[in-house]
Image: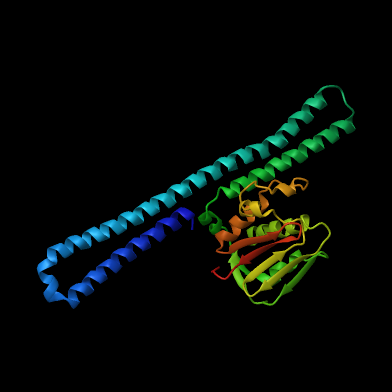
Length: 284
């Protein structure tokens, strides 16, 4: 569920709860002291309406403030997303343009033209891959859930990622979920790929405990002040500049996992490692 709907539902429930509580309180007072309060029934009605009105007004103000904050945050996030997407698309396009201009400056040998075309093809592939990711990120959760799903036995599914640098320790071989295998594989591949990339030649540990999957590396870690931003598309921590990537893999993985009801959290210690925790307990 999107944050805007969560805020609306939360304050709807609060409003209903407040009105119900005040109504019950006034009802009990009237039932317990009918003889004393009967002459003041009009005053009680006015007091009831005033108190309810004030409480609803207070709830409405809080709702408006939270929605304004959320809208502003979403707007700033969208601005950042568009700016970063433009930058990421501009890099390969500039490289292609530069390669073409250099190739056309003078007559070259067939092998030189082939090398130039290979570089152009490589940059074009980067653009295609980036556009696919952008198109996927633009989809709503409903669209993701419409894709063909099948039952996945999680422990068995994770075995395909095993390699010499990965240590896998499951305690649950029966947990299952329904998801699109290709999308689910993309999500897990992106998270494990990050763990391997930032760990150098160190081991990566994958633990499955009940319905909770943890992927822990011994890599460079994430600076504490940047930890709450790593799920944003195109955002890359300041200590990752020397590593290849465009900062879209983790946000793509989280988008897929959230669509299927999983909760994703991340903890990290700088220069010691990062742990991604995926909780499937609420997955249908």
